[in-house]
Image (cartoon, rainbow, N blue to C red; front, side):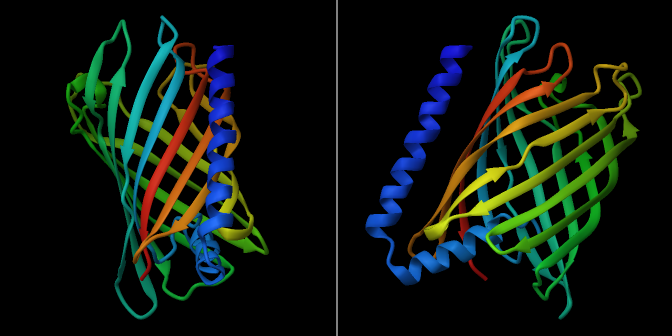
Length: 271
């Protein structure tokens, strides 16, 4: 594990150094300014920007044999203008999961959808509220809950100088599905602090904090601590966002992962 952490830390340093050299050598001043603006928009979950990200998560110390679980999330964000004052931010998430032994399962997890209603007019303080849904399409079935689940979700974002700060939270409750499967009562929340550097570079802190309320006491919470870096690069007609983060889970269930590495690559389309 120590060797893995060292390799991941080296990878973070090298990727940041490479993106820094790229930005310094190849981004014109006007594009650099656009990259800075786009970086801030991508850090805002309810910004009026189409993005198509792939997020890879490597969860270390997972399961009874403490091996690595891999989860790749396909999670496009598509804003739709409902009126002159109101946007609907659509964010589906489809996980592709590979569980190590003794589970030895690979497939797709349940499809999660969040729809935030948010003001069209951008300001330093932005918000969104709406439903979050979970559809039981997991295959094989062990990778899903077997339950339809719904609940509320909220996000608040504040821009202060070079910082983009905020948080989001949603809690789903099972309402239908396989009666033989466990009920769902699950909280997913995220606090994010982004510090923006010149030419589209940023330092990111965005731990995903979760709680399974149906689990026994002491087994409910997963609380990560860590952070990472990202770089927005202007391309022809789009922007490319590349980022990497490492988190240690200071609180986690007995069989849950002890740490994780996250790599994100996303195409962003200005509107």
